[in-house]
Length: 240
Image 1 (tube, one colour):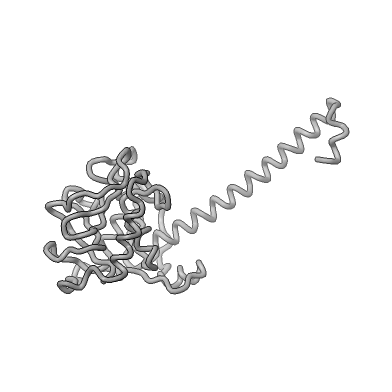
Image 2 (tube, rainbow, N blue to C red; image 1 turned 135 degrees about the horizontal axis):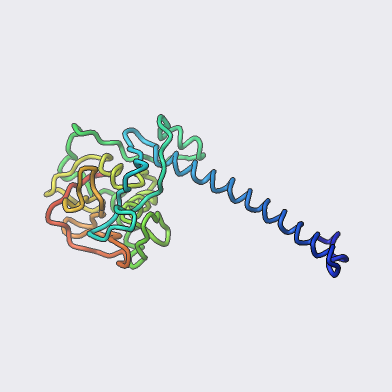
């Protein structure tokens, strides 16, 4: 730019400066595209990490919306696109230079139920405390924090604060951890209300803060709040 500065008062100089600026703009666009592609690839790896995590279908809607407040894309939350099959959690940790993070175990249909009274331990309590620091923050479909969240993003972020990795959407989260009997729910359990279920799975998730209350990122226009425990639900325990 300095080399053409003396000529910028001439028509030719102005044209040369415009050409130079256009070249710089194209270079910047190229760098942004590369960065975006890297971010997309990383998001795909995260979505596909862990045994049994389902990828979102290209034609279908994603899970995670809340309480009757579904997003314009139907069920809310999470990124789009497929995963990278076969990428295990340990391998992903290596790619990201991870340390001692834990992953909530992938559940199976025949998973044993969580032992009665086994919940509400230090990790679960810390996850709840982390979530409570976000009371009043906005719901944004697909947001994973730290300043805005959708329903599964809040649960994922809260457990990430104690080094436990859970899935990025409701469909994967309900397949992790251990099933919990409704009468044994305690702080830290993930709560999937029955009225959000369809043939694909749950459309909403909350985090129990006690046997009778939950914290949730419910829907657009409703800040993160504390709500009563739903009358009918499925519960999973990610940490003792």
